[in-house]
Length: 74
Image 1: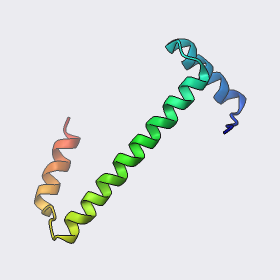
Image 2: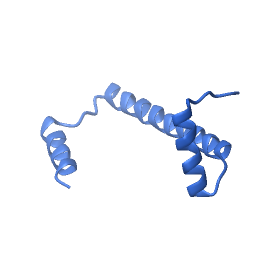
Image 3: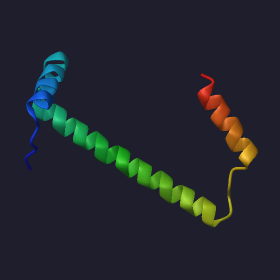
Image 4: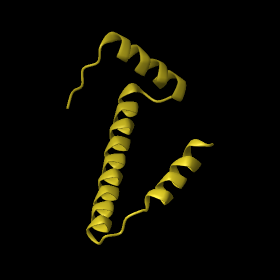
């Protein structure tokens, strides 16, 4: 597989590579693998939520407001 970066993107990647001590290819592979892992985790969480919803397990509006309030007060 090949990827094509514009000069600015290549420069940024080179800077990160120099900072981390890895080569650019390793960084791209690491990033792609993280993306795949995060995508799998997200999809699993969505499937879990859909199953919960199918069973009628919902968070009340009051509980959701409380959760959002705690998340934004930090």
